[in-house]
Image 1: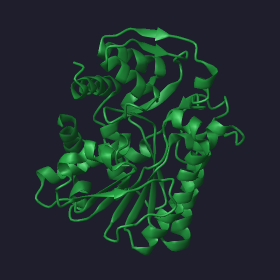
Image 2: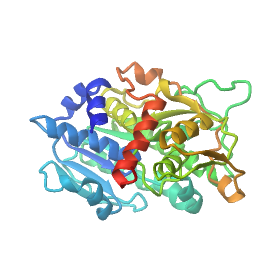
Image 3: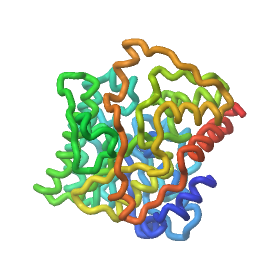
Image 4: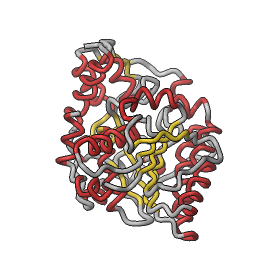
Length: 352
């Protein structure tokens, strides 16, 4: 809660939250790492301001999971649960929605490898129906949570320079793991095409490597898996050389950036989400997590099956200048964010 208050007051999003007051927001994937962080900020705003963000609608595949996560808000007038499964073609779209934040779909490496077809379909097919509904009901703006994986792999001559929003590298279309990247690229183009043909106002965000205590226990991405292990007091096992540099961002910083882009981003544009104070390599990330949990860092060779889920990008650095120009500010550097993540996970699960 202290982190949420800090983000509301210091990230520069209070004007955007005030602008959302009296309007309604639909979040698909609202129980996920990023979606639930956005919901936390919106709920906290409603608890501390007279005019709430009306009819907050949380989209998810499991009402039970949503109840566990947002149960205390279920009887609030500004909250309504909506079943939303990105694998389904059609949904009952509520006509009263003003803004849509679309973040539903498989994102865990394990699920991407296990369900490649479902992952790609969810990134594109159901999106058509969501955008059609937004067009039909006159939604003010649709924001798509894409991924930094759309950038692909750069040539060696460019090295470790961060990706700007207009720069793209190579993606091997015949590698199943790349369906996530290809699906996100296709979805972005569909978004922009709906704006071009039908006038749907759309913006896109491309989060880097997001971490935080809103991560699911089933999330096997590096930061989440390491943090849960450290919080339980287990040694961390790193299965790479750890040299890959990444643009990391604490979940609440990412959520505040999404809210900023939703209201201030330019129609038809994409924005990287990355905190310039959190650019570190995987090895340093692992050390920070191990230190936060008081555990050891071990290194092992990854098995072939595990390698299938690895991010194919050696360089995942993102240029955040475009986002910063909107007036957004990150509140948590890597050391602080990691420390808070492990500490909160310990307290939430009774492991402290």
